Length: 609
Image 1 (cartoon, rainbow, N blue to C red):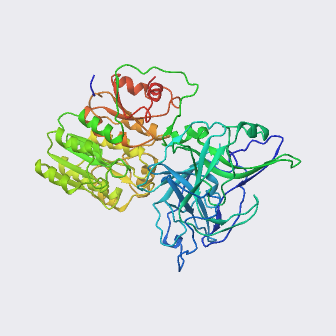
Image 2 (cartoon, rainbow, N blue to C red):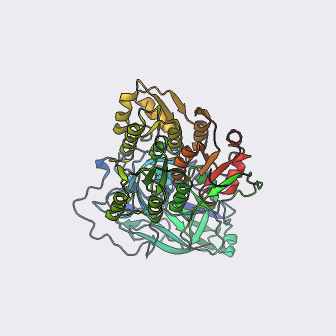
Image 3 (cartoon, rainbow, N blue to C red):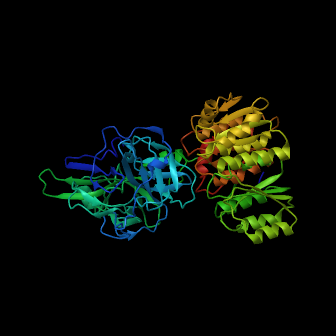
């Protein structure tokens, strides 16, 4: 081991008369009138909703560009150019009637966009396309498309899982916003003639960039006067600065953290109309931190609240660097006798998901390098540290310059580049390369390549079993995966990891030899770790966050090399003593990979005892 809300947001209704208008943003694909509408009682529903893939017919079809589309203008979305690159524009639909929902959102994880649930109310199956900007300009290409979306009964928020994309990520903060806190409310800009009343109709045209407005949370006196509870079901800000299309847009604090998601514009008034308040109503992230964390979104400032403090057991070491790349370098340095250095990116999970299987056939370490055109310092350092035989580049996203290539050649190292047309093809190529080094696999593991947690656990298991790993595309098998499996079906065990892969294999008419599908990502990983017979003693646990992927990528090869087991640790208090039995069988010692912000001590302590 390493040394040593029902109906939007359930606005609180006091003795005042309050009207709430949700900004659904439903309108025709062509420019049209913008209005407001409300969400039906009981909305949003709970559970995961699968989105249809977009087709060419879903793209905008306009003969001429929107020449009047302003980069800047009079818009209730604000006049401040959005400095937050994680803000996105979302087009959901069109439906059979040609209508589409146009909303805003924000990237909060490598393949997750946070938005408002009511954006999906008329088109729960989508399709959904995500744009950095220019969503209403002909020729604009989406960054990604939606795969699924999930919601909660506690408020008007939705988390959409997307296809792979490279993009910035905004941190989410669980901090409650005090009265009079300055915030940025951001969203897409396509209102050019706003209405003067809350229920009026605004003239709109497809806009280009994302814009923000300066707002503040309600001061304590105003909140008390209108009986709007601070930090409760809503995050209320003034002045009113949103309109149609801004639904789902993020509220950022001064640190650039997402503290709310725009839900509606609201009018609170006394029964005699002697005083009125127009404000923005948003869903506060402080209320949804546990839900977001359970789905894999990192949340800053989330704590165990009133949970009992638990001391970490002895014989636990934490390995963490200043960032994900440094952490990967530190884990690599703790791996002795490395002959193969695996290089992949830490920006997105796609390329590296299948890389860990190589650890079963060669003594390897995995290092992350995020630059697109050259190797980062920790990767160059790894080239010098080990007595390497080869360098394996997994995926085309990790950069390799001419100077890097020359250095590798000068050291006499073999350079192997495993790059497919997409993540599924890359996984196939990695599996075939594994087979060329180690012979026929003992089994083939299949895990979902769209959402990362199942594949993280499966990669380490594949390496330990000297098995191969290929990826499903949600509930379907891509042709590249099917092509790898076909010649092995009569001779090799097929093992599925997680519900999507289980469905994909079954729908392809393949009888799996074993399935490991838990109630969530944590139980799936635990079931895999405890059920597969590795035929030897277990040398401790390697514990990683289940809410993000980079640390687990780096830890996978190390786990195999140490004869340990990789586990995903749930948030503190959510699954008490979840790993207690495995902790005992693994010898009561282990390693935490990643910083305390990614995996707090209390998460580990609660999971182990």
